[in-house]
Image: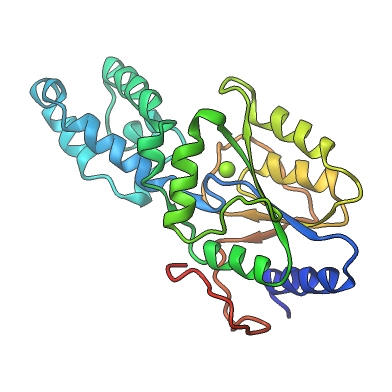
Length: 256
Ligand SMILES: [Mg+2]
């Protein structure tokens, strides 16, 4: 059976060859293309290393410093609680400490690609496709986002069919923002696929572009009780078991 990722690439190539409309793929960023895991762990380590935490909560600090990717929950306080931290004041402090850092450019620069993601985006562009990075990050996060995309080998926004669309305001709900953007996409544009880690986001893609292949990333999500629409594909990452469908002399990202 053809892998869904290969199937989408074939479709990109087919649509591209018709020369009518450039095939476009939509990608969420956080925990779809870039993992937020290292960002969470860095913040936990920085919190636990602070002198006031070490002096008053040594045991909890030691617990938090030792956490690994497998221990992470979506919310930082849930991660700490699951690790055995129960002091309410400490949990509140951690939450505030996390909020002050998680959305800052300096921390976004720690993000690493979901396996195979940069290579896949490169393969799409190589076959004539365009990319829309559609993210719940806001415009103040552009610098760190571009840095992480570049460092991880993703095709960068350009005048030639690669767009980065950020939220105009931090406090705007992600789903509302994405819904507005999707509705504004001209019906003349050929959306062939969309990728999202939030089930509600994937369903939104599916509703707006029922003819496209929508793919849900089984990485990490907010845990809201949303059922994924039946037509949506599911993948763990972007690694493909088989070699690319076509080869060319184009340069591909080295670290994907
Ligand atoms: Mg996401």
